[in-house]
Image 1 (cartoon, rainbow, N blue to C red):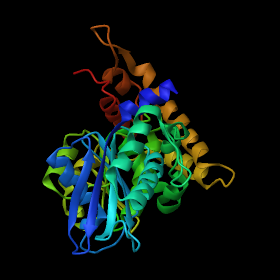
Image 2: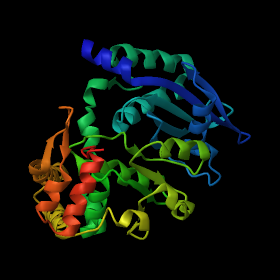
Image 3: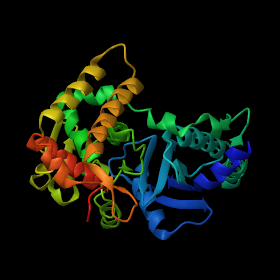
Length: 357
């Protein structure tokens, strides 16, 4: 339990409450501890209550400058306790990616607020999870942080679904991720964007890095500035106008039309050759095998990725300062790989910071 205590104290950052009243006004009502005006405005934007189209999104999540946000929104049934409130959203901010964990916890907080109409009651449960990793109640349900392992969150999406939609073109996504390129994904429905984008980092499982994921971004100056500070990323948008912003991406994925586009500037680094065809075939064969689970498909891709790094090993040497392993470009050229393979290995070494400067 001590370990859980330490982790949750380090991971959860805050809890907030947004309400929509009978006049249609949306207000940031309460939070614990305090938050910045900039983060508050961002969370109001993400919360579907401020949406003009009045569509209710029960749960959304995303990341802004290394802070993850999780928002659960509910409609208030006729209630004696929350008389003037039609809907409310509970917002959790945290340092870790774990949608299932925070969806479960925000649902419990929603039930508490519906019952008591008092944020203090929610704060008690929040502090219980923060300090003990657990909150229990017969009427509102129980929550145990230890039930939600981060690896489970990493494996929750479906690689098979991605391959069934894009087939051999999935290798474009794999290559873009290997080279730490900027991927933008568009679909008008946020649920579709989130499901797709959260799965993509699993294509480069050797990194196990979900900090590259920004699953819900608006074309808002502050958000785009935060995004452009990252070297490579996966960014999800529900605004089609993003397709006219090639400054934001190297690869554009239109989920509605099942189309993947590489921008002219990224084409040189992402030239496809025999190696990519091999990787693409492996991904498709593995994903189409009905006997294999999603995690087995991820394992197959990870093994192929490991093989690629093994190919780099003979051309690598310890840098002059005796520090890290760097690529010897001369040795790579002498091997006379097909141009597309040599090009890919060179850009991969650059992405992994293995080039001599």
